[in-house]
Image 1: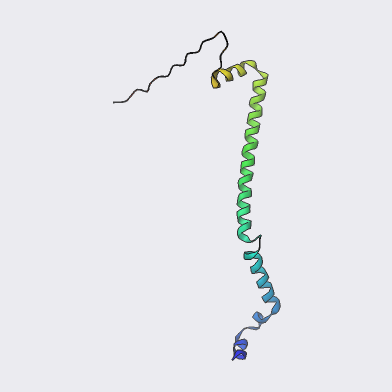
Image 2: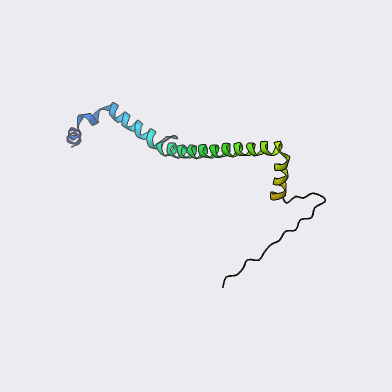
Length: 105
């Protein structure tokens, strides 16, 4: 009975090298520590980190340009201090007027 079953299997599937190769490929593709799914996830993470790195490089370039502009011109520095940080000179008084929004009828 076993002999009949073995005779029905094509000779190519009885090849020990083919069986070993298929088992090796399956182990490497699905059960290894660096399988396909892990490689895909790591590739996606790498792409995200590269985009984040480019964003931070652009921000650093923009900030360094603003810093050089502020250190080179005292009027720009004063303008930034007045507008963003609400600074004033000692001899000045600042009045902030907050208007109530007009309700529509």
